[in-house]
Length: 309
Image (cartoon, rainbow, N blue to C red):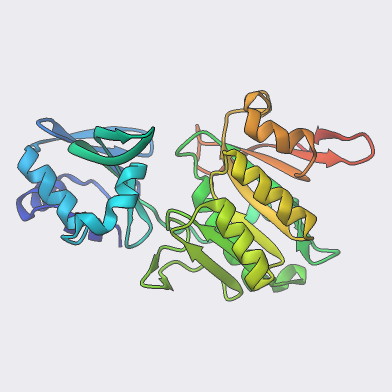
């Protein structure tokens, strides 16, 4: 339950937040900043709580997030976030310590953002008819794109569940899915057990880069489709190319607002112009999270993308 996220706060702060939360269903973020009030972010508005967080309280919250072992979470801290039980991502900022061009620590933590993850069963149903290739009982290589916070991860999680379990109403048999859950947000694995419903034919690898995870899953688990959230670096492109050349389908997400922005990204454009993806889906969060804005289909004869809607 979303309320469990309050356990990471000191008791006095838990009570103040709980007394001010209008409903947990639409709560998306809890933002705390040293010497500033807590801000609750809902889908379409924010609420400021009259509760100033001290630096001592900030450190106590970090210790609770890290289960009183900050050292064991050092790698995640250096990436700027920690994923906690339930798949909630906790963003962290402060004084970055740099060594040889790499972040080796973040100290004097000044801001923490709890991004609340939740399963929405069925939220990918509208998208299935564009992504599933029922004639061959597989999926089309697909890239799902939207700005941050538009519901990409939530939809991706539900897609994995559907593809893995199968859908009897359309005679789609479930297929083996290899899920690279780099930040632990999709499966929300806790001590090796997925807390979220990601289907019965899904193999998950966590706490690993997307490129390494894709390669390992293909070599060890023989998936029919590989899935990863938020691709965006050169190594991801190489791994996706390797997957496609190995006969494995893929569904991935990335940040962007429209096709022009994606093509302006030198990493993503490499995949677009090489026509790796058979479907490109854009989401629109202005009205409702996860709403389909536009879908492009690859025309292999013309070697170009055409709008499907």
